[in-house]
Length: 124
Image (cartoon, rainbow, N blue to C red; front, side, top):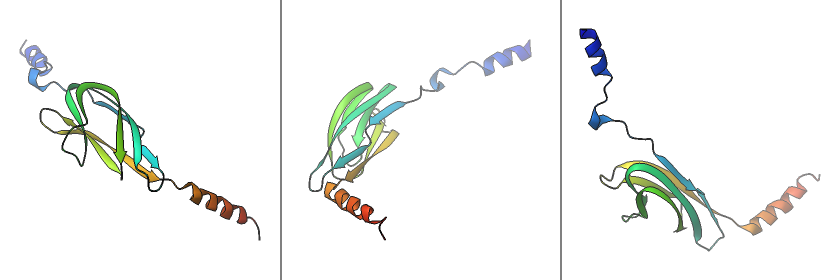
């Protein structure tokens, strides 16, 4: 009987130490293309699901962009360089997850020049 009691106690979860549900966090797209001399305007789809309230921050800013436990929103950002978005606990400020948004400049004229050069690669 003593062994049975010890066995049951070992498998009873402690109420304060139950493992939290895994974080579901999505940002789309994670690449922002823009023309030279123009800002990179990104229409970002943000989604997360968590039991406790979280806030989304642009790493370089002190104010949160969004907060909540379940978020499914569109967010418009103007970026000038690669930027890290951080998801932090609203209560403690602890970092839960992060994603990098890359900013790439596209020069369509450079593409035409590259195409012209590539046509000459095959001629002796």
